[in-house]
Image (cartoon, rainbow, N blue to C red; front, side):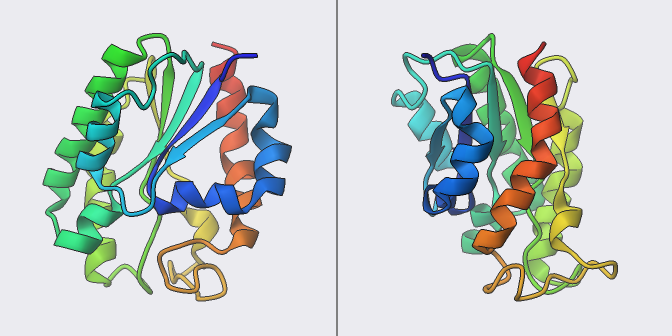
Length: 186
């Protein structure tokens, strides 16, 4: 059968490969493909798309989350990271015109909202949510699953305050599954 679901992103997405039980349980039915790469920034994803990353497949849904490394490696301004994400979306619309894109808010990082890198990613999220047209591109922010009621990120959730622990991957799946089901049916 053909790939119906693709995940695109950086190490946070790549790490689904480590948690195969959760992946198989939630996404195997869609013949899902993971093309997340550790360390990727928006420009790396654009390069991959230009060099055949999605050639020969026509997934119904693509889940994408990218941009935290633009903040983490370069302190890149939120608006610049958002421009990179916009370029990826434009490229995907050309390469995969039939695919529904589920763009996730960049996950929280750092201890709390005062963390400089969290501020950058939150700023990017504010901009990229405006890119959703609710027709081909959809935006979903599931960041509450990682934070307590004071918006603090605990090391029990992400040991390095950046990468979710393995126990969070089933929760991630649970948070996006209703939207995936909905988009698969469109």
